[in-house]
Length: 254
Image 1 (cartoon, rainbow, N blue to C red):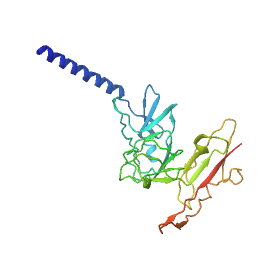
Image 2 (cartoon, one colour):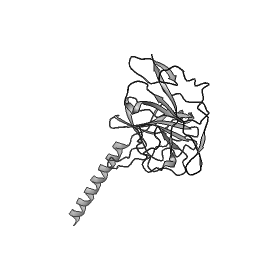
Image 3 (tube, one colour):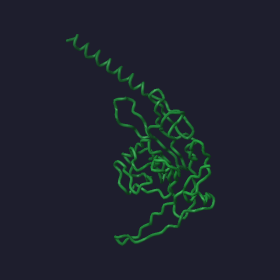
Image 4 (cartoon, rainbow, N blue to C red):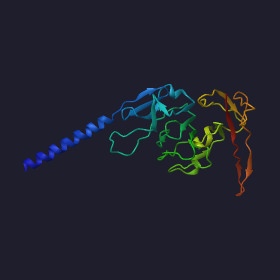
């Protein structure tokens, strides 16, 4: 009996030690990179954005990078300590100043990550229509998610939280990536565009600005040009609704 009990205790100790070692192997500290706190996993082959640095908390607009220090960003969220767990914890994007965040379509977004940014009204998803994650939304959160599609395929999200971005930037050359879209944004009708996206790159060419037509005749002036004024119409239910108007801008390449 004692021998059997000893075996059971030994096995329990070994299991506990194994779990502890597994957990410690997953205990990765946050590193600060520009505006974001980041955790690197898998021998620095995968990066998870876990929050904001003090500098990041001062920004009105933030762009989630696709890579940090040459490492692909996988997720906005926390990776579990034990690899056997399949769930991912939310990040803590905590800022009173943040109004808008831009997120590449390739990055998984853990729902609830923006719960501590009370003024974050818009998350712009640079996507071709499908968005990863976004499950577990905080009902007190005011953030709406925008794409270049009329309706987004959000898991566990209803259409009331979705929006169609009204400003589209195009690569403006023969390219199939993301259906030719380079960037999207959403601003109030009749207002200026306050955020200029990063310049698109193409080997052998220099970027020459954003234009109002594919032929690149009239350049968009971010200091003076405004979006069209808001228009409304009566829908089939007899209710007044805002008419969607898309402003298209095209890259000029020299």
